[in-house]
Structure formats: C-alpha cells, structure tokens
Image (tube, rainbow, N blue to C red):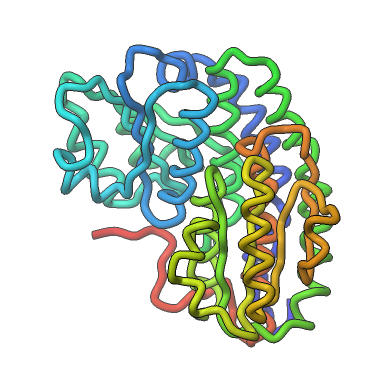
Length: 352
C-alpha cells in the first residue's frame, strides 16, 4: 500500500476467506460445545455480550439465534451485565452468557463472565480467536483459529467469529437447509472479497464524501453499527448508523449533497428499505447499496454491489456484507492520507 499505510489491515481483510474456512473446519471438531451450550434447550435466555465491534456482532448473533432456534436471546455491551445486570436480565431465569471477544482479554467481558460464574442459574461460554486467552481459561470457547490479527481494527476476526457462531446456531437447529446456507456463504466468500476489493478501489476515489450514514435492519442493524465504527476507527471522519426506516423519523434532516448513504439491503424488507434510500437520493445523497442482487428497483442508486445468495436467508448472508464495508474504511483512510493500521487513541485490547 502507498506510504506503507494499511500494510496490516489490507491483507487481514483480504484473508477472511481462509479465516472462515478454518472456523468452519474447527466447528466440526467442537460439536460437543454446540450441543452443550448453543443447542441446549434448558436455557430460558441466551445473552451474547461484547464490547465495541464484539458487541455489534453479538447483536447479529442474537438475532440469528432467535430466528433460527425460536428461543429467547439478547445482546448487551459487556459492561451492562457486569454493572447493571439486574436492569438487564429478569431474575430467576436460567441464563447462558456468551462472551464475544477477539482477544479474550477485554477487561469488561472477563469481569462480566466472572461476575456470574458462581451463580446457580447462570452458565458461561464464549467465542474468541485465541485458545490460550483469559476468557478461554475462564469459560469453554469456540475458537476461530485464523481470526487473530496484528492490526488494532477488527476485520477478519469479526467476519470469522460472526460466521462461526451463525454456523454453530445452524448446527444447533438440526435444520440441514440452514447448514447448507452457511456452507454456501463459505463457498461464496472468496469471490465476494476479491470483487469488493476491486469495486471499492475503483469507486471510492471518484466520490466526494462529506458524512457517511449506514442503514440496516434485522441482522444487519449490528453490521451497520460495525461499519460505522470501522470508518471512525480507520479515518477519524464523522459517521452515523440507523435502522433503515428509523432514519426517516428526524435524522434524515442531516442529508445533503455530499452525504453518502450506505444501505445494507435485506430481502425481508427490500421494498420498504429501497423507498427510504430513494428518498435520500432525492435529497441529494450519494446512495451505495449492498444487496443480494440488483434489479430495476435499485436502478436509482449511484452504485450497487451484489453479494449474491438471494436464495438464502438474510441472516446467513451477514458475513458477505462485511468485506465491502471493511474495504470502504480502508480505502477512504488511504484516500485522505490516514494509516488504518495505527488508529488514533486506540489499542487492540481495552483494559480498565
């Protein structure tokens, strides 16, 4: 990369197909974990916790769990469970607390797990990228073996952990169709990553971007939050995220020429979400849509990136949205002369 900027981040984004494949293979050896935890029907509620990016992927994990298993699940920042547990969880329920942490060393997730480890109605487990981390010593964990990163900003770690947990939920469901969907995502990921790289490298330098807004619903709400964070971390530019239809209720007043609207389009709410994007286009926004496939209904957009997989569920496609969002942050950073490998004020592990 020019000026040696992005020499860590770029190859880590580009290596996520290998990370997903390794996570898939490792999951086959951890089916006992799936049966004991995610597939165990004794729990009244499963709570996924994380901090920052890990919390945002926890939202997608919880959404997938509810939809595919038909049982209660929620997601919270780790600190909410550690410091405000009684405001977050109904007393007396049998709860599985799932820690989500790339490093497994984040103070907040460790403290949250420790705070309930000895409670009779709580069990703990986790997902991480390092099998010898503090969290893995505290609680049995799924491990994404190639998810570890040198860069501060989470990219392939987040993609691989999100994919791995969703695959675990698919296995827990006993529904072969869902497992086939996750295998289809794995098979498609390499080609999507290559096309996302080429697309963003060519498209972004032609744009004049002031502020950036990410819109997403359902399983993509957490992904929109994550995309927003990626851009802030890599470029220090101001960006926000909203539920797609919620954006119309006041926040759309900030849209003006030079605003980039990036819509993570679902198939479930496709027609409704496209109405919002088209309205923003009329206000002068530049509209970028990430979709399973383009059509006449997306022709108004300035650009549409197709990820494929229209025949599979919105939830399963989640990992395929991430490459373009990550490359957007990377190439915008390079475009404005900022090194995404060295984000200001940040460290890879946050400790209190």
